[in-house]
Image (cartoon, rainbow, N blue to C red; front, side, top):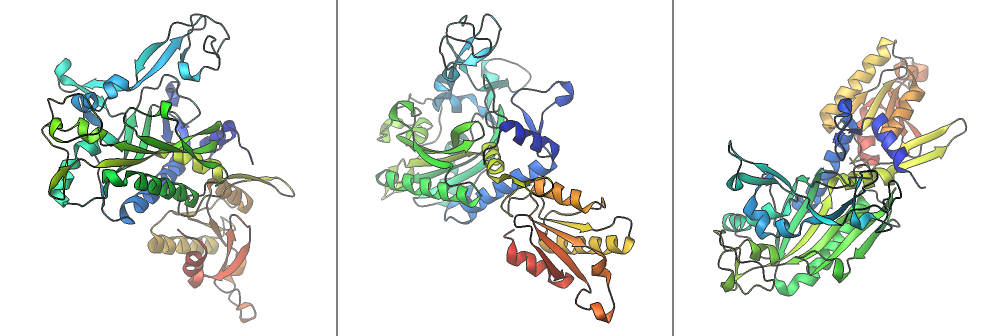
Length: 458
């Protein structure tokens, strides 16, 4: 089914996934806060990425680098010169637009007038100053990407762990871009998180590893619940490649607002390591960069007794875009006899809440006590979010957890309390309701954990 962005944003606000930031003061464009459900979903997606990239691969090392970035880093990386968008202003309605977003290059998309200014470059990086004095020497930046810190720490990790090619360095972290026109909910924002791995390979094997990571990353997103018919491998044409790239393939997804990039897998060659190296003229670099008079490191690794600057394959995904894609894929509307059912069919390992335990009546203490006991037992064994819902309205509780994406609801009812021999099949049993199929299973309380383990891959 197709879903509008308005429907998705309404659900996110209603069920505590994502809120506009600073809303009590009118909000800040391009900034959002993750609510109780959203922070769990986001954390689960990040953990799934980290497990796949770091724990399940050999020789991929983790890093958590500083957000504040040395000005020289972004100067020699090329960001100070190239990290720009062309923008225009409308003289009539005073709105500002990116040139590449204009359908008609001479017409304002807001008011329709043709009174646009001449295009001018706008650098997207957010500048700040360190220390009490603001001058050229105190300039630093909020990092526009997580990659550059990986490159500047490359030699440190090589010296510490002595890896052999191929190996990788992975990082999840905040990045900042002063977007001219943030848009489409959390798709394009000014503060976001990236999930990036820089995978260092021998230059003769770059094309093999580039294709390897395209396939790996495509399959991983399918495992997170994305519709394979809506996930596309889209090679960038040569004229659109970044200044550092030999080749890039984007994984694009059919978001509510259209098909756009979810993740890019780039062959960055030796550009970045070369840009941050001293003694560049001795390294036989394939990508010529500006001479570096400030670096104190030679960004090379010993290979066959010689200094080698490896090529870099970079799978780089936006975590916020990933959340948006997962929500888009999970959203379903189903027409039932009496009403429409809205359900998020999230993969169990991504679901913010794993199980809801619901006493059938909130004012019957024996039901509530049994429900609390089951909840506490499951929290100890699963160490994951298990909630007790005690509103007393079983239908509303089911609808709430359908929209949150909870895979299973456990209902404690009056049959659960039966203790006569004629009803011994019902003694200490509960009903487990499946979110997707709506099937219900009667399970003994001692078998709940094994049933959940068998049916849900948490």
